[in-house]
Length: 491
Image (cartoon, rainbow, N blue to C red; front, side, top):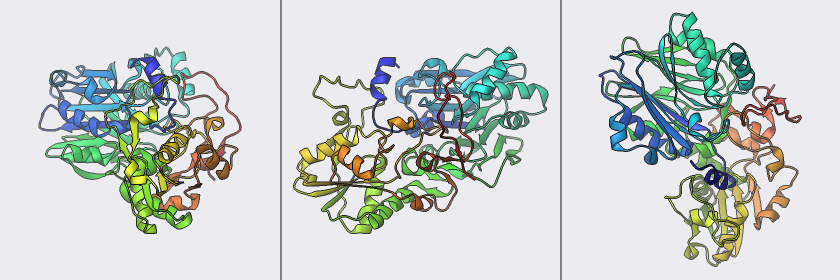
């Protein structure tokens, strides 16, 4: 991706997740590249900067891996011809948005390592909070890094441990005991497919089965897309090994009672048709809308959602309040993450390129607009303005998450506090800035209802993190950067 295009897009007031992972092992020996392609296509919402596929033939030589990575969307990088050249019955795939490491082809995943025991293909979703420290230790022992991403640190440690132990799953477990942070991993060894999830369960990972093939994926929607049945979620702290000899083997020596699922998977990141740790994303967002209607009611004529994640919450608000649900926004589905943002001197707004208002739906009406979050506030004021220009007499904004007050260190690109509109501002102040008639956020005490009572991380709202945050900048290129006094830990 052209770096200037990326910089033009990413100053938008939107949240981004790090990536999506997918892996498959076909015990019958069928090629899997096409299936990985469709799996990644279903996970495209999790990362749109780069994508990659790596495959191997388990009946062939151990050192042979075919891979293809590129910048851009899945359907831009791959063609039927390029997929046909990726021969192998085991493989891993990845879609990426960078929260740590630059947006370059060198940092695209999966990572493929050749070492004395054969090959290793690794796809990672998450952020390691101790990556700079581990990286320096490896460099002092002679390691030469090809990327600036923390995923390569994991790959190196697995390769080094594999030389010293009897199995790849033991090597993975040993390596993961050294890292701290969030990770959902899919790893391809010459004869096994391995999945691993960090002990807190920040990022999702599930297991599926289709005929005589087993699948690992970030979300269950990817299983639906390829016609696979959902088997179960990988538990927080669990390592699973998939092989024809033993099927699914589970290793739970890193499992713990305290979990910290990212609550924003339910609010925004995950696709609406996914189920994460037994909780439907759709039901979670409906619940968020219902909670907003109970806690922050207002008289209005129509409830509308900002596509896509705001729509289900708007439906929930409508169901609870009895106010009709309407469609106020038409979204241009062909705008990717790489479109050229208009210059300030031009009349076109990047928001208008992506969204247009149906005047007939809002003209002369009091509108309740539901959105999933307000980060910097630069987009919210434009959307509110567009509704007013279309004839809305009142615009009441309801947000299906609490205010962002702290950065995230576990795979979400929430910026530093000074860039957050809610930092040092009251709700009334924010309401005036975005030009709404009223504004209300989801209450913190409602979050357990969104997760179905499951434990979750709320650090971006409360500043209370499940582990000590890093003292160095883990979201750049591993340069030393001391942070302020935001090191709160959940007791």
